Image 1 (cartoon, rainbow, N blue to C red):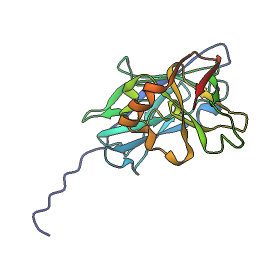
Image 2: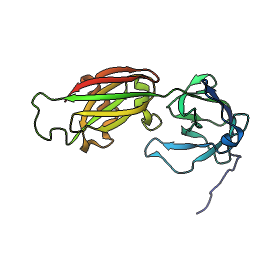
Image 3: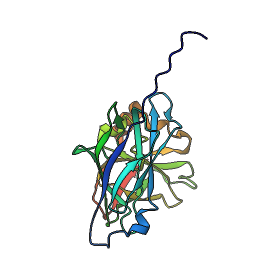
Length: 227
């Protein structure tokens, strides 16, 4: 092997802050010192890959990512402290990038803001009906929930908390919690579908026969769908 040139450069840095909205007591320094979340690099062809970078929260709620961050598309997986476990938003330079792939370029990032709230996310109960009920009619049935906003369809992985596959019980009901506020499509599928239903063309097909439901933070909604 000849003519190989390897160019090295410092890894990128990410700095920002975490904010907390609500009436619950703000986390103490001994709690924030234990908080950490990851930047997961993504590949367009193979999804998430190895090589995560760890971000830590300082006592003043500022955050920074350690060595290892490289240019590319990344997922952010933040976890809030006790009392503030509901993610509200992630902004970069004032632009909302919540549940979306973060584009890391050739420059350091200095304005990342992650906001948590002390209110719970939404919950949803899906009731499935059939034209001709029969014994064990829901054995292979699942409720499929996905966002109506098509921006999330390109990269379901960063928006995974907005995509749900929940088995339907013997009474024809599927329940799910911790859904972010927003508008969703709700329909049914089978247990054999795996994650293939999250492909854009399949989501488009499913959306045409799905029910719509709008969720707000802390609300409990119910929707009925026909299989």
